[in-house]
Image (tube, rainbow, N blue to C red):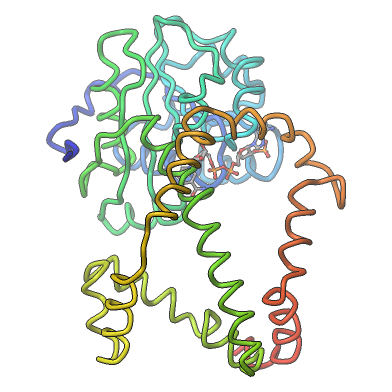
Length: 342
Ligand code: NDP
């Protein structure tokens, strides 16, 4: 299955003419996307940053943006509104303060599929819902734009209330610089599935493999210091992934020794992936796509704001850091603080 890729030539910036564009949030993505959009020629007087009165609001003011602290007021003006506040607070803020004040034909832009796929936001059928989801942190969204480069981004129309949702999504993608290198046609379902799968299936397995590998090698007499450096503190894994992005997932192996290439390729081919595949499918279908995780996560969301042991995330950190790997790393970091600071 190959996805359609949209370029600048597929997008018409004229569609944004005379539109009032509101950015709800001026954090990671909000600050980057608002500046890119303005630098693409959208007049500053047509851009409003909606933010509570604090340092994010001050940052927006210092960059010359019009800031509105009253979300209802901001929502009433919006022809287009970017929801760029954290995913877990979007339902509360959007449903209570934004949705009741939005125009019937407003276009709502999300940068992540989560709240749309799980239907946590109250939209009107007449409104356009689009996803413009950069695959980059905000600072890179901005710095690549400034350098005249594009960045990877997923784009989709999730609800076409006005008949122009996709065209608007493409115009907005172009305005934030996302169609320069090609924006990939996607969907909230696809984006959410891949994101949560990586977080709940792929990376937990990688963490588990490192944890178990650490214990096996330690038992065989390897020192904590050597293990920490060998496994991640040398930054070799980061380099491998960088090479994988540049040269290819398999072809990056050419940078390793012949012994290493042979061992890695032969070892991987000899591993039976069927148990992992079954486990992965279970997570994807019975935890992610069926909304089981989302429903369970919603129940603990308020607890995640609490301090200390009342916060379930804190407990997970404590348990994970109690592992042999976690304890050893703590000792090594304390001992080699000087070396690590260099
Ligand atoms: P941030 O954590 O950087 O958002 C901070 C902004 O949200 C600030 O303006 C903050 O203002 C506001 N905010 C936080 N809490 C509240 C609240 N309770 N009520 C109102 N405003 C609030 O978010 P990101 O930029 O990381 O994420 C925004 C969206 O972009 C999400 O959908 C995310 O999934 C997506 N995304 C993020 C990426 C990233 O690199 N982080 C990459 C791609 C997509 P204040 O605290 O003053 O209210």
